[in-house]
Image (tube, rainbow, N blue to C red; front, side, top):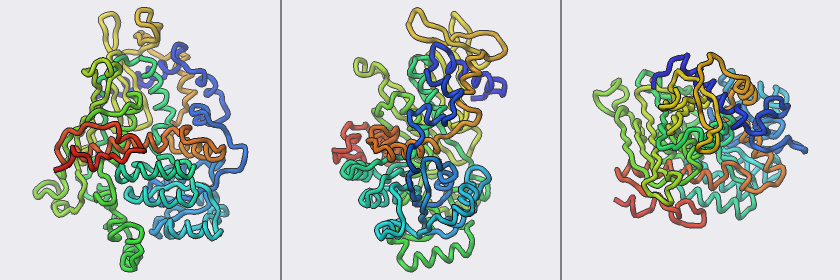
Length: 518
């Protein structure tokens, strides 16, 4: 969808106008504009901690972990220990690798406080030190390769620790159910870092959808396109770019058998884990799960009905396609995927033809389009752009204008009841739109900080798992969507989702369902 800069600004103004309208505005909007507490606390109903910050350890110190450590809320969380078998990752964690996204613990905490953070070579060593009384913490943040989410989470839950793990929840749905059951058995909190559940931007967008401003939603288009066809562009293949010194360290760990003990067949598999089915989940798990999560939120968190799609290794490993050095690429995962999911519409229980369709694509050879989601409703279109912007446009109607160039406001729809979009010709947004933007803040948070704040708040106040916006049951539904999509592509079948897959008490899972048998 080609949108000019002027149309983009109109779309952003329209979104703020709708959020700030007296007909749609929530009570918290006015308070948020002038509040001294953080936006997360205001929007997601948690408060400052009365006691000390919750002591936490981070397991895994790669790029994603360092984003989380940069965002970690020091008023809520005290980082006391980190664990990672890669010495280079530990070094990067303290020094930082990016001036904003991954600033490093020395800059985040100060040199003096960073020096007090204890360092361990694995979660096994970390948990043993805690058992021996050498380090004290009550929660962990897990940011390791996907195949190790469940084994490490289960070990931590067994040790009496609350667990916040990165997405995707686990490598398969059996593991997801094991994690939920273990957390419930131990009376501990388990949450998964699908951060859109803690994005103020997405929360306000979803509120407009729930109020009916977009009308009937029949289609959501989601995508995350990248271009790895240029030399040195593939960010998921890192083995060749790490230093000789780190390669030597990791190969020694491989030879000693310690990597095998941690779940990896080789040093290269540990470094390039996203490329292999044994350690990762491919484009659908790593990227598509974000979009499926957002689409599910916009459709009322309903479980999907069916999925089908195509996935292929169409660029890497194809002789005559792309640079010659890519012909012998050993990755398992697809480099192009195209998926269609069917969701129940609002009246599906009465009318089985009421279906909403979500399409998802992730390709590796073109990045012309931004990543995000476009929600197509009968009364309006909502574009969520790279987690930073929300654009809203009114659908053109016989009675009033609409489209990409038309500003809008919210009116009371006397015929249908509730608020509705209308167009107007002024060249500037109203005071309501300006107030909405002030309430949401100038710098849009992607939700990392807020999810950690809320998790710590729940731990500190001994709240139950139902208070977590992305608890194990919610996160398992996201995992089921992503991993079943992978199965549909692998077996070239349309797979129908079953209710028992979403029930943690049931042993039924998509991986062993009769639909996927060859």
